Length: 201
Image (cartoon, rainbow, N blue to C red):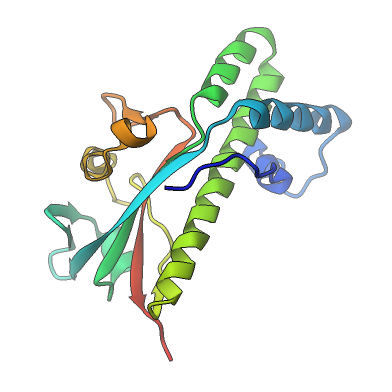
């Protein structure tokens, strides 16, 4: 489990979530970005959990077996092709961003949009840190990582969230719950699979 909130905003990533593709933000947006970052850094509570499992991939049936979980997904089969181990992870930065978005949606829509983008950049940066931690440990065993893959990507259906949550005990361990539509609460949360494969010499 990886916790602690000593990271800073990735402004480039936040601007990407705002739709500012390479464009320089105006002074007001810059101000709102910095303001939102300060507010989030003061109260966010990042938590994560991950576990490693054996996996097998059946390309003919487009099926992945992870422990007792069977996943039908062509996209995931391509991603995990050749992997015999997989890391299942979940991470969140807590409910603070959701509360801020709700508050500013009533009083300041521009600020709400910026908080949404900055919050998204924080959870992305946090998961990148977790992935680096997993990578270091995997490299020590001669293993390399495949790109992380989350429910909702390609044909990897959101319905598999329930099984991943059960495997990691997400609600109990890091406080993430699921809606009836398999969306995560807090919203700034991520689940993902990361395949482990033998490094090529």
